[in-house]
Image (cartoon, rainbow, N blue to C red; front, side, top):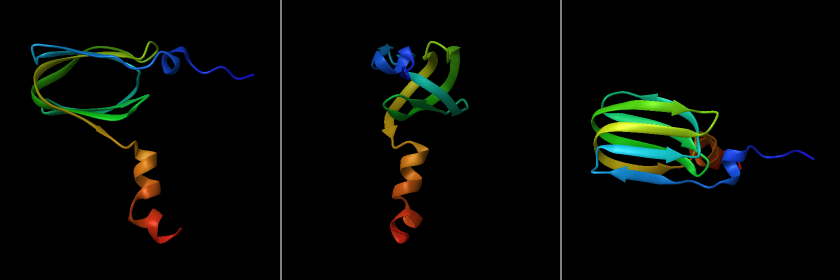
Length: 95
């Protein structure tokens, strides 16, 4: 029997303090980051954080945790890269 990693069984929790600090669990990968946006893959889909002076303060992919700091102006969920490809233009053309 194959057992799922612990982080995917615990759900996801997002905590934000004063729009300048975020703690998030359920993170599986950091896709990209710079001072204006951070993209993460999580157990609930891809997330984007937009703002100014953003940086990754702490990261533990083994535990699925990340801590972000900066002026957070936007948080959004996006389909994962796999879902985008399957449902994109080429995915619809070749069904």
